Image 1: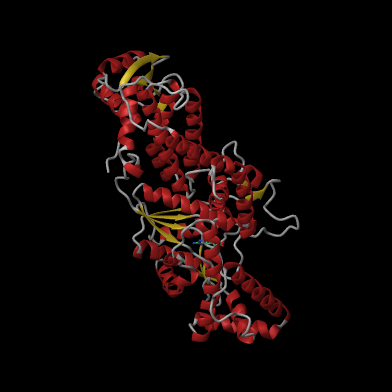
Image 2: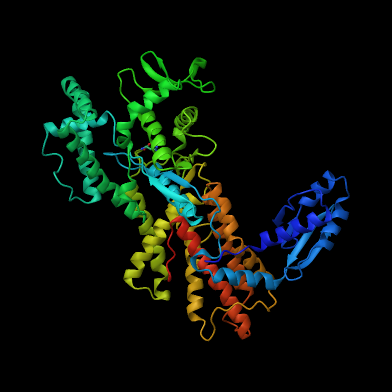
Length: 587
Ligand code: ARG
């Protein structure tokens, strides 16, 4: 494995050296950016000259003279009040890309210097409840962030904090005790059957619960039995969890997403820690007793009438809730899993909860400057009409139906072109799935997570515009060009002069690693999506302007262009894979 220094950071380093020679007493960043005028523009000299009370243009000229980089730089021009316009050599571009191409799947992207351990809390549906589009977002964004983090060398641990605890289980368990035939003894159901059983029990038990005071009382006692570890109660609770998992897994499989059983660690897993969490918080003076409950107050969090809204660690009746489980989970993740970052991919509507939980954990010193928590709060999923996503009848849309429809539409799109490409029926079905699921994921990931986004299937499976289908077709087209290029294979030729479209594509390919580092550090998968879309667009321009096969250019030129094709395909493939999206070879 050989990491490659990108041209941008190479140029930046040479500029910094020249700056140091020209202006020994200051250290400063040349502030290199990609530019339309030349390949790069350095804007940092202006401010540095002012700081040293010198003339910016003069300093810029001095820096240019001190630059030692004939191999790397074709032209350096002082422009405006003291900018540098920089053009790199064609040789540097192809040589750098050749080093990337020689580095397998990593494409020369270096591993982060001080990797930490990030616990990613994502894909957390609730037991005995249908998953909704919000759970979809958490799963898709969390999975992509995890892929990106792993690629940078960070160690990630997944935590699916499923809702598997709470008072509703008293009602459910009591109901199946009184109606023993309702819940199958073993789970041999498929996901859909499992969910429909759970739905039926949920509705039936709810109806009895609302109508029958005595049942309500028995259900309440059942909660106590559950919390105190009564065996029969726990067994039944476990069956609800197992049945739900069958359903969860069927959805995750549809989503083409791998979820590990040992990472499904729900609210219940922290049950044994909660009393101690409360005790520590009280001892440290972080939490105080108020009207019988144990709570934490915050200066800046006020509700109606300017009354402080506390975080409730323990209720008046001694019970623990959502906050106590999250606080215990933080202790576990920091102290036992040695996490250095905690990342939560949770609906923005829970932001206040996490703000209070994180602040409490800081006061308790579980979190500090070295161990931080971040809530990647995502916005609401809207329908094509811009209103919260519902069916025409106003009920939430079932996730599986949504995914099935995406696959169905994508399959139709794939089928239309299938004959020309010569796809078998099997390939059509497989590709339809990858395109449909990819479309759903990409639409989500290409929007900034904090924004609401429109779930619009027509737009998602469109071949034009910023969609995964467009990127998947770009990839498959390149692969087919590589297959068809008889008598020539990808070979880098640094001695050749490059066309503008080749340079633009090449410089963008070279920026993959830096873009990835930035997008990952900012937890911003949409930046990776935007990069890939731009890559496909630059490729299209390149392919229009620089013939690869027909008309056949000189042998070396053909080989060098095939080399650019190949590296583009590999970068697209890797980038999409990090986002959790497949790129079929033939489409
Ligand atoms: N199960 C919760 C829900 O569906 C999300 C859990 C989020 N994670 C956490 N650590 N609280 O709303």
